[in-house]
Length: 238
Image 1 (spheres, rainbow, N blue to C red):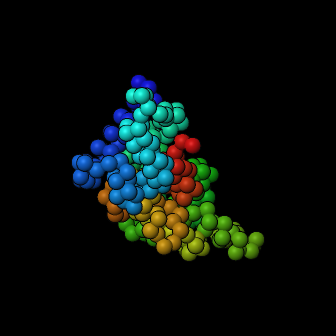
Image 2: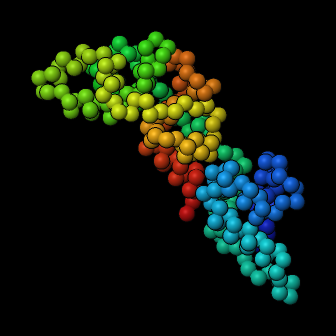
Image 3: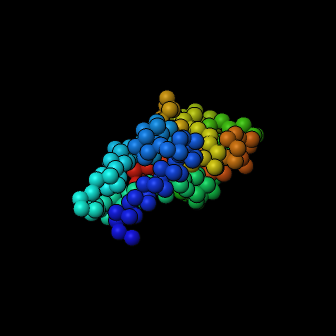
């Protein structure tokens, strides 16, 4: 197919899918659909200007011709970008698709020396801390740095035997986490993050949006990794 034909097919499939999914009028145009959904779908919101231009281009291609010839051909870049948006909307990436590492949770009675051993062995920077089945918070490299900075050199040896429940108090981000389901899409997570009053340091991924002990946590995403994910799945190809 030519770029013109590919573009028109994409416009029609994109509009039809969104109209059916969000129960909009079957006669809705692409321009109407994206205006309705720009505040309901993060990807459409982020790429609204481009999609609005694509809707205008579609109208020109379909309704304006010269001697039965189309007046323009969409570029390869436009096709590639629009195809990416359509496929991302059609099959959104979930957190289940993004989890690669296991989560290591630690007991509150374990010591500072224990967490240092885990960091050395696994290079993880974030550890959920539990007292029995209750989550006390997430100990991160932030807390470890702070506790070391506040102790005198002669106190470091004593620190190694300190239980994690006391070390956790040094971590200013220990409660900066949210709990989400493994089935949450990257778009839903993005929208959730936009409505948080505080900066989120850690996303705890669970089966059913709640935690009942350490085994409930299926995955863990830190803010730095989340930024890269947003660039990949929200911003997309440039």
